[in-house]
Length: 93
Image (cartoon, rainbow, N blue to C red; front, top):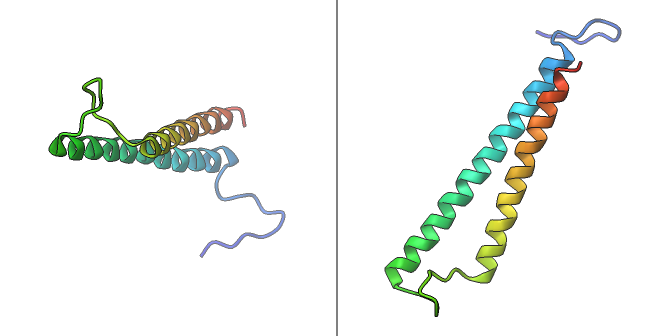
């Protein structure tokens, strides 16, 4: 059993704990990017099955779908950037 007593040293170094948080953010961000890509591919496959082309001959995703995919891509990339910055700052501790 791990007891934390005020004034006692931490069982783990702060840099290790910060690196663990960075790993958590990196896993979450990468999962979000992969899930968004799979969601986008499934939507395109559904459109291909229904043969829904726009006037230029491209597969036409709805505007709301495009916006939410763009948001998830940006949020996932931001999470990965945050993980990188946390990991980099853990080396300075």
